[in-house]
Image (cartoon, rainbow, N blue to C red; front, side, top):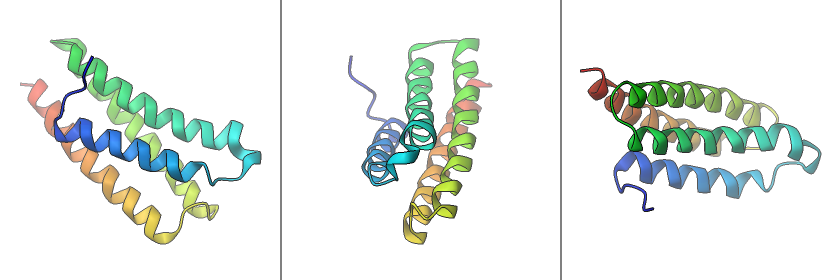
Length: 115
């Protein structure tokens, strides 16, 4: 199955790849706790988008609202990466701006399903 080439899907995929490349440098002692949780949130966000894309009606809106919640959790978890000095100021700024873009795209889709 091919994923849609819409900006939300493309940007989500690109962000997950960026995150995976950076989490490999996080301390090994946090690999099974913090790092896995952070990566899982990113994968769950993408998975919910895919589920929403394959759904119709009220189910689509439910998946999109869940994805919005995952995005909020991802933002919060990424703040720890900066606080613990796993990501630099530039990297956290990049990720915050990227997540903001994803949030706007998701919000537009969610608004369209509420009509």
